[in-house]
Length: 370
Image 1 (cartoon, rainbow, N blue to C red):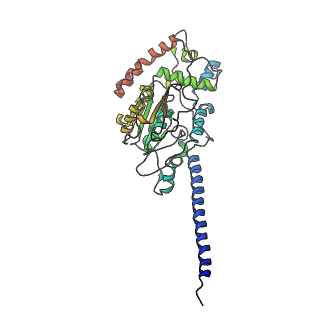
Image 2 (cartoon, rainbow, N blue to C red):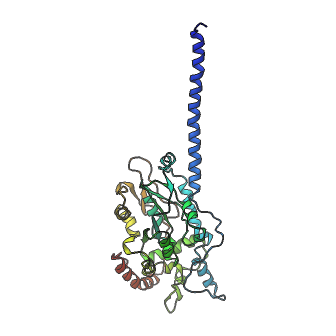
């Protein structure tokens, strides 16, 4: 049979065309798999809203069945498991959904990555600046962190470590896995539970002037429950006697030294880092240098990553290599505090002073709250 150039060309063209189609199809398939992976990966970091049986925190005093309506309101404010207390958390999750994860593609391509239990945890405190610290840390390429608060060691411990591990993002061998749940610091059972998971866990506590923190705590609650009693009436057991109500969580959380004693029964002081919430605003790069050193990381997050927002009153994040608009924390941050009776503020300062002094001695750092 004679060789025909025409037949040869007819044979080659369709083959080349098929190859091009296959190539395009492979690219499209890869993109679809990647998009599905991102969606599934994000959803896996969000704890379920079906909490089942929820353990209530101990407040150090039982509530009498015949307590006054003011007492009932106070008990409601102390209920950390109330759905309203999680509203801000889910608002933050929705905000995070808008941000692209820079490590998603590398995670997709790198089969050696896996979900690990956290080697470091931000354990507190509420309204101290934990969300800001977590967002600052997530700029670091060697950190993989859960955005939502897992509440594993205080509310979901009965679900087991494998449930907890599944909430974690995938990380490579050189990356550090982290999470933050501010209520851990004040929950009695948590130190022993974290120690049981790993006695080498590094713990970070973001602390703030306890009086300002209490007012911020109250302001957050009032934004969701406008009809709650005044800050002044909740602060005292008996206003005329001037006796501070230490069972109110807004007051109780700020007794930092009392809670620290419980942690030191399980962890040495060198495994805890105390970050100043005030300095996290005034000098975020300086505090981030301390945090990165504590975690054994390179100082990647520096002053070039921060832009101060005068309207918000705290730093916003920016990517130094780009010209994009700085990313600020959500609308739930930076609320205006109500005006509190100066005498009540002074009474609280006097109340916290011995706790603050003890805390300074225990940590070896004067935070200057007095």
